Image (cartoon, rainbow over all chains, first blue to last red; front, side, top):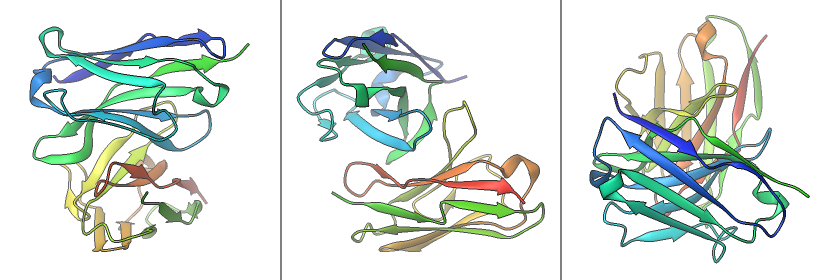
Length: 120
Length: 106
């Protein structure tokens, strides 16, 4: 069964850094495009970043551009999100999500999410 | 950037009701629209993509329609498992989600 499992969340002080990981199982990471989506407590969904299957095409939301870096290691079947210069407004559950094959942009497989709390 | 606006924000309905949620895009997105269902503490689940294509395994009481800037999600007969929050999402240019519609028990 295809599955995504995020890890790396936690409590961090404003200005700090955190690296999230997303481990894939039950399928080969290299065949798919991925995104990170976040959800602040009690709020809606916000797209954060996208990476193509090869890793050569990357996009970011304006709210994280210049602070967050998405990457992938197809050999390790893992996706990453390096988050620097964290702010209180970055507090959220972060989900990694796999795009549907042949339907780019449709998020068909999600992880369970990892909570990032930015607070002093 | 493309903005997505859902209405209503909250909807109270009874079992068996026909429910319709509307999603409007700030510019034309053709049919590049998906609908998701999210229950508390869980990740979202895709219901419909390309405005009207039902994802495999999703009950046929869910349907989607629309193109351009106006879209609807319809639940033909509301079931107990359907009380949740629903989000539309455009994928014409990057990704943008609507603010969500919470479907509550009346």
